[in-house]
Structures are given as C-alpha cells and as structure tokens.
Image 1 (tube, rainbow, N blue to C red):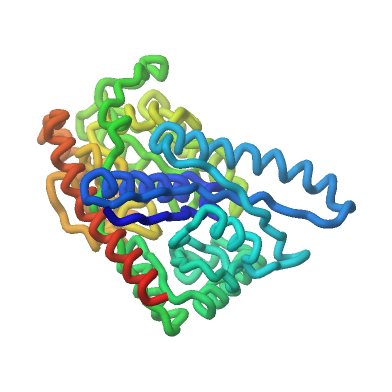
Image 2: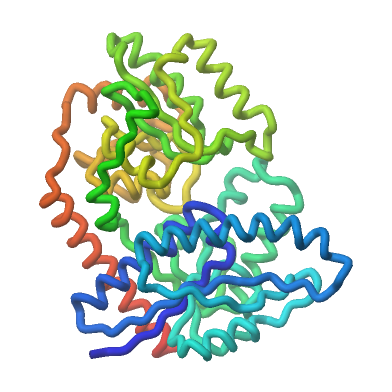
Amino acid sequence: MKKLTVALLADGLYTWDGGTDFLSNIACILQKVGESDGYNIKMYLVLPREYYPIRVARNHIKRLNLNEKANIERVTNVFKVLCPEVPVVYYRKHIKKIYNDGGKSLDRTLKKIGADICFPILRDYYPELKTPWIGYIADFQEKYLPELFDTATLNYRENNSRNQVKNTKFFIATSKSVSDDLAKYYPGNYKTFVQPFAPFAPNTFIDCAEDISKYKLPKKFFVISNQFWIHKNHMTAIEAVKKVIDAGFNDIGLVCTGRMYSDNRDGKYCDEIKKLVVKLGIEKNVFFVGFIPKMDQIQMIKDSVALIQPSLFEGDPGGCSVYNANSLMVPSIMADIRVNNEVEDSVLIRHFEAKNSTDLADKMISVLKENIEKPSKQQLLAYNDENMRKLGEFYISMIEECIEKY
C-alpha cells in the first residue's frame, strides 16, 4: 500500500465559499482514492495564524481576529461534516507588508506533519518552501472585467500572479480557459494540470432531506446560488422570469440564495436588483432567502426545476453552483461564456446567450415542459462514483508527477 501525506493549504481559499468547496472536494476525492485504490493517504487542513510583531497593530488585530475566527469556523465546520478524519494544523503566517519569511514557518509545519506535498497555493508568500507544492490561480477576471476592480486590487492581482509564476513549477487549474489565460498573460517555465469537469457530491448531499418549508417557496422554482456581485448578472435571470410568467407559467418562482449586500464595486447594485423586481411586478415570484445553511441550499437545488447560472465570468464551468447541481443530476442553464462552453449541451447542461433574457426564458420554458424526473439514489451514486474515479485518477497522477519532478 502506497503512503502519501497531503497538506491542503487554506490560505486565501477559506475566506470565500468557492475556495472552501474546492478544498473540501479535494479532500473527499483523495479520501475516496485511499479507500478504493490501495493508497494510505493522510491529509491535513493547514490554516494560517496571522502574525503581527508590532504592538501598534493591536486594534487592527482585534478587528481582523473577528473575521479570521468566522472564516476559520466556516472551513473547519465544512470539513467536520464532509471530511471529519482530516485534522487541522496551524502555522504562523507573517503579514507580507510587515515581514515576509518566504514560507519558512509553513515549511516547518509541513515537515512536522511529514507532508509529501502541499497544495493548492494561491499566494506568492511561499517562494522558499522546500516541500513540493502546487500553485493555483482561480481565474483572471481582472483581465476581462477590469472595470469591476479598483486600482489597488488590480495591482495586487497583477503582482501576485507575476510572482507566483516566477516561483511555481506546477499549477492546477479548474478549466482549460484558466490554463490558457495563465500561459497567455504570464508565460513561464511551469506545467499546468487541468482538472476535468466531473462534478460529484458527498453522501451528505445525496442523502440530504432538509425541511425547507419555512422558506415558503412555490412548488416549481428555479434557483440561483451566487454572491450578489455585479458580474453574477442576476438582472438577466429576473427579466427572464417575467417573460416565463408572461408565457403562462404563473406559478413558477426564482429563488436567490446568498447574503444580500451591495457589491463593494457598486454600492447601489443590490438596490437596483430589488427595484427591478418591483418594476416588473414579480415580487411574489422572486425569493431572496439570504445566506442560508449549506444543507438548506443543497435541498433547494435538489427541489428546483433547474439551476440558473447567468454569470458573465467564472473560473470553471458554471462555478460552484453548477458543480453542485450537476453532481446531484439537477439540470443547469448557464450563459454561453467561454469557460462554460468547455462543457457540451446535454440533459443536465443547457446554454443560453449571455445577457439575453429572451433566450434564457426559452430555455427555462423548455425545461418546464420536459418535466424531468428526479434521479434515484442508485443513479446518483453511480454517477458520482464514476466522476470521483476520474478525479481520483487525475489528482493521484498530478501529485505523483509533481513529487517525482520537483
């Protein structure tokens, strides 16, 4: 039996839901490989503890600690549910603006746990790591939608990517689009591994049977599970709902999960969304349920007619919400942006012309008329087992090559 110790680095990932999902998915995949393919895989979730060496930063630290505590609780709670066997370890992360140790503190922690490899790393803080590691860049949204970022953020992303490429031998990308962009904008002497589109759901999602009656949703509804950021483009979906209702489907709803807060790139955005709903007269058909428990979100996806992904930019096909829906064999209707077109149309995947509410409405009506049956548990298990097999082969192959050639 082959032994392998993997350190999953949460720095930069545990502050957003997509990053937390990415980490927990990797853990579930490697857990499955260990059970079925003769590997003795030990995993650790590695979290940073930010270190401020100067007293004048105390008030700042107190504010940050509140955010850090919430972020740490979020990622550790997800792992407790999905991968309870994965222990958590911490390392001292020096704040780059004050002092940067190049990753020596992280490396000491990795040596203590006997890590053979550490990934995914999406910061440029760790150029001096001696342990083999794999870099990760989620996407290059700033190259396509620069107007959504302030100058400081644009500069940060640019510098981080340049330094990553300078110090990284291997990258993992969740789509060919990201891999192509990495080679285009930051050419270098590295190899990129592209994860295949093979969504899977943990058993807790497959067995999910939450009571969501408290939300008072209609019997037939579509769901959007996105942050309320400008590029997520809720407006197109809301306009499409109005057209579906006008076509005679008066009883349908649109459920939007996620915390309703104004995108910091446009403080009026959420207000504009609400005003559009009122203007179209569909207040009774659109439900903003807020930031809800993960299992409630999964149940809403399972109960929906289909998931809608109108986003104008994602790092992987459909983003996390399409990943969740597809793994549960729930149809998804997503905008025909470049990364989404890496996945062909099928019973579970439909594309509509981005920003075209009429085309989206047509696709929604088509799914309503098809009245697709919900899959059985046996079908879900078979579908997920096959996808996990594909991903397991990909990750083991990548890890072994990186360790061998590091």
